[in-house]
Image 1: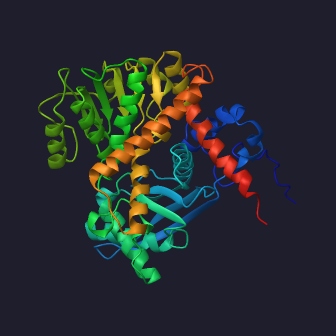
Image 2: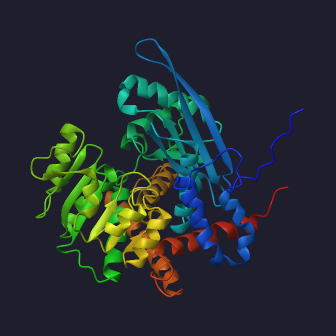
Image 3: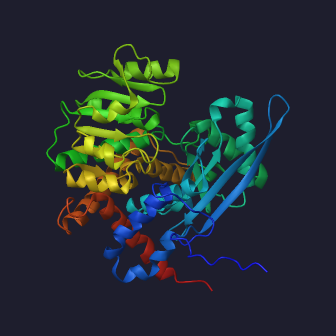
Length: 437
């Protein structure tokens, strides 16, 4: 007779995921650990922050153009619905895993609460290399995935949006599929849609604009003039390119840009409009003739005043943090800085504006889009930008004041301050709602 081995329960409390020490989910858990001393009586509810409310794994089979049947694995995670419907993007990437989607959903809970939007946190994804699919295959993949997660999503339940390798066209397919399945056109089921289908003006550049607004406010507080400031950007999609454009308009010099195709550098500053045209023609920044190329790892040694990591998570390690020249790090991506690197940067006097506030411009304008869809009354781009700027400035001010109450950002990082503000809002709502039944 075989006696089963008795083992300790997993440290994350979840039997279905065993992340590595630098995984996104483990990074999130360590961030929650850091905010625990600041939660007071609400700490009795804090375990709910460590456990996603719902995780769905789906098989997504489609017929390929050559007649083969291919299967892809998809996910939708709802981390918290305490403050409202789930809200979070859908990414298509070959490295998508459950624990990554869990972390992204959890960060959405924090982000929405930090900006005080009436949403919980959710996220989705499919493990796929989308560049290897034809447009028709991509449409089939999207529609089948939407049908598979249809039991979770809805304009009052969970509202997807674009993320890595997804865009307005993907959202249009999702909206159409959901609408056909429920028998009514339901524009509010997703955000980030084309304007013709209920999308919002200002949505495409909203995340990058939010990075700029947060950067402008943070730079003012540490007496860093934007005029002449050297800016390095990792990732040159919607977020990185929009942020670079706005920093250049404010007088900054974009000295280095890196994406999956290469790294380009020019001390006198890159011309952002020309680089964007090059990316449209070639698919990436690599080979841009008006700049010098460099090795990917050398990007982290470029002299700069502002660094904008706007690619994927886990990019700033402790070793890279020791090498950075920047005074200000603006997290355009989700989870780009590992916890050990956070400590290094704080110790070196580098201010980090965390993802959960810095890149909240996208979800804020998604909220505007959702509201406009319900009312069927749409705002001008100026109105959208003005409302976005006001919300982010107020949110960052509250977070800054929270850090000041604990000795300033060198004592309580802006990340911990943001988590303190967000977790207090989430857990207060959880306490007031109580447990059912």
